[in-house]
Image 1 (cartoon, one colour):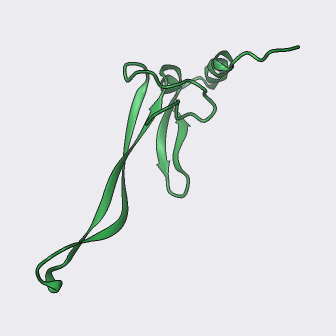
Image 2: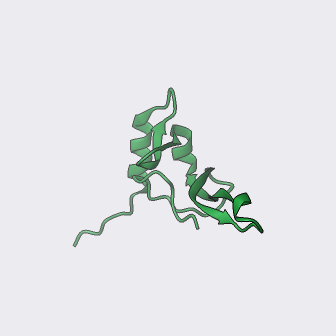
Length: 100
């Protein structure tokens, strides 16, 4: 289940599909044998699953996700996005710390 923005620096929690952008990644895992009456006709097929990633409204206006082999899903800036705004968004989302 999705629980927060896929941007590791963003603490925004997932609340609704109406806010932000959902990404689906279909992955192939190890192969499984499909039983067949004849061992000669045995076929193999990859096991597939779908992984879901979500970027909050603000992050999705500045970033997108891409898959990198060995690293998985990573955030990359959208062309022409203002990275200064991303820093402002992240500072606003941080929970306030209490001073005693």
